[in-house]
Image 1 (cartoon, one colour):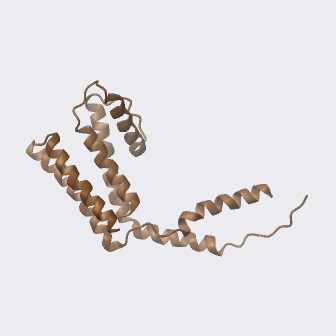
Image 2 (cartoon, one colour):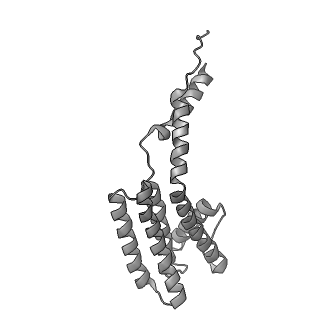
Length: 181
């Protein structure tokens, strides 16, 4: 009986996010998420083609990107999940622009870059030294941008699946068994 109650409790906990308010943005508002991602990627594409950049230029652009994301979040044009993941990409890229040496920030940078690469690619990055590490970080950023595009693309399918799960859980009638001692 204890097992059944525990199982029912676990199912209830799993159903809570399904029964909660819908976190997905409406289809019309997805355009803002796409625009945020496009402006970010266009900026780096332009910088790569022109060969110009530098910390000051990147810092200014990132201030603009985060201001746009904050405004979109306040106006409920993007949801919390998109906002947090987009902001994390900006933070990682911003940190990667800091001149890197074996100074005081090296441990923090190694840790943050390692966590990001592990979360996105599932691979270990123990040190942010050399082109293989830079390549892994770039691959992780690229993958996360793709993941955010897929997140926006699949919001309708996710809503449909959520409603299907909700129906299953709301229509479920557990069997009543007497308690035996």
